[in-house]
Length: 386
Image (cartoon, rainbow, N blue to C red; front, side):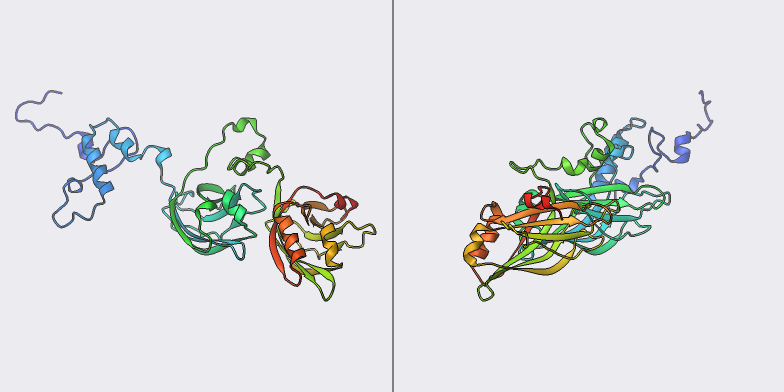
């Protein structure tokens, strides 16, 4: 366009609107004071903001370099927020306590620009329903404060060496499915027993599956738990939860007292996501099959507490030839009860199961408590029926 001498050139539309019209989201042009702060205001802008301003000045108009540096038009660089929490492992009580404190700057998930966040915990590897813990939901906020403690029971030193705690933040939606916001994972081997550790971590996106099309819908649902850690050598049995057992041999009563105290994060056997568990103890060999004892049934729970004792009249010298089979069942009305998990204590067992029994045999009149892992292996004697 030709402008005659003496005429004033028209103002370009980009100057008139004072915006950057380069491809990407429309953003106000940074003021000159952002690059040359007023004396006495040098500490107002963070180093990141100063660098951002320099990048915008160096980029030529329309080049798009300023936007890519800031990540405004890249979904992969969108901030998901941060999560602050504490973790404490108590080896004496075998508990893992995770205190969810707060989150800041969560990604908006609702139409109002806010979210209804809550936090879920999972121990990996492991069945998701059996060990899931969940906080309350904080509504209409991107900076929720929970100050809520979630506790896992029956966590052994072996778990601390090989398991990972997955902490995920989700958005609750009553009309549709809840939406995933972000997650972080803490290998338990990084924790020191008895010492609380504070975390303030950025949330990350869930890792995509290698080939989701080759999996069934059910397998895709639990794949994040299956692929987290490769099972160690010899770990072929599926974990079904934990049980806390106490053994005491009383010399005066000439008998063995088996205390079934509680179970933790059992496998869910019912469609409601829970079980109706009870425990059965069987001292074998028992030709007459009179040593079978059962606890009461606890309704709709994966963490039942029993605190029930069984007494077996037996000489201490005979304990070396005996073994104690513990099985956990899900009670069903009108059909066969479902097997949840079991284990065998005795000198013929291995690992902690053998050591627990050996301690009881060698040290009478002393109470020995221990958490044991339930597996999907059904003891032979249990085939006689629950």
